[in-house]
Every structure is written in structure tokens, then in C-alpha cells.
Length: 231
Image 1 (cartoon, rainbow, N blue to C red):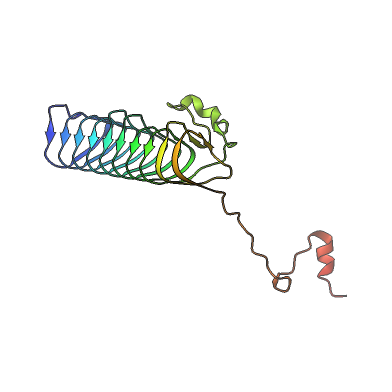
Image 2 (cartoon, rainbow, N blue to C red):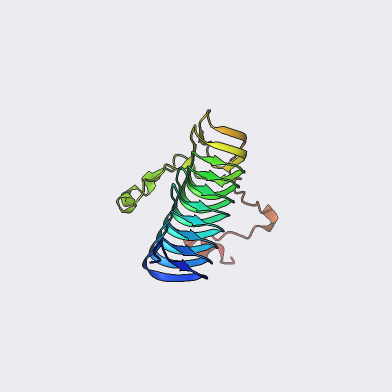
């Protein structure tokens, strides 16, 4: 633990069950643990891997986060880009991300402010905050809902979002929304979006082999044995 009155003059490397940073790190924070909570100030990057990662303080540069439950809380600020690989990512109301957000997750909820763009590959995406750039996302069809993993829902510390794209009436997207999904998203008519583009996935095409180039098919069983005999 780094207490609120501590200042680390350079980079900080941490490994442990629970990692709590309440003070100031003048360099980068590199951390691995079951639970990682940053409530102080990191003047460089945060590179973290853990089950639960919560940014409550200020990260002045990039945040690269891998975990099960990753959050930027109401008071959390990241000065530049956020890159996340997780089961769930939440940017809560009041959170600030100064750059872009790159997300690879089962679900993501974006309720704060992102000054850059969002690139995401997810099963479920909910946007209720402000994104000053573009949104480019690949999401699942709405009918592929959380019932697929509902038997394990007891073990999840967060609510499961329904699959697909959901944009609330409070959402503001200053740039272009481009999303690829088997079905159209649930987009509130009151959401402020500069431009929308909906794309269905490109179907996989099996190349057709010309008849003359097709290999002879094997005939199973007794018929195959008889056909091999030269009379």
C-alpha cells in the first residue's frame, strides 16, 4: 500500500493480493494482483493486471488494464488513452478519459466523458455518457442475451448487460457512430449523434470448386468395395 502522504519518486512495481495506491507515483505504475485500486495520482502510465481494477484517482498518461472487472469511477481521470481487455468495463458518470478508449470485453458501459474515440469488440455495449470522437464497435445480436451465461451469474460481481448495442437518451456522440452487428441496436431517438452507420457482418462465402476440379467422392460400404473391382 502507498498511503496518501507518500510520494514515490520513480516508477513503482507491485505484486500482491491487494494493491492500494492512495499517494503519488512520479513515474509509471506496473501492478499485478487480485485487487488493484488507484485513488492517488500516477504521473505516468498505469499497466495493471488483476481480477478487479478500479481507477478512482488520476492517471496523467495512458492506462493499460487487463482484468475481470475493470472500472474508472466517478472521480477517476485518465489523461490519455485507455486500453482494456476484460469481462466487464465501466466508465462511471463523472469519469474522464482524455484520449481514446480501446475495449475488448464481454460488456462495457460508458457513462462518463471520453474526449477521443472508442474502438470496441464486445458482446454488449451501453453508452449513456459523452464521446467527443467517433465510435466504432462490433457487437453481438440482441437475442444472444445474458441467458447464455446466466447459470454463472451468481459468481459475477456486476449486473450482466443484455447483448447488443444500447444508446441511452443522455448519450452524446460528437463524431460518427459505426457499428457492426447481426441486428440493429437499441438507440434512443433523444440521443445526440452526429452520424450513424449500421453494418451487418459480411457473410462467409464458401468458394465453389469447378466440377472438373472436384476430387472423386468415396463410396462407403459394400458399394464402394464393388466399385473398386475391375470386372
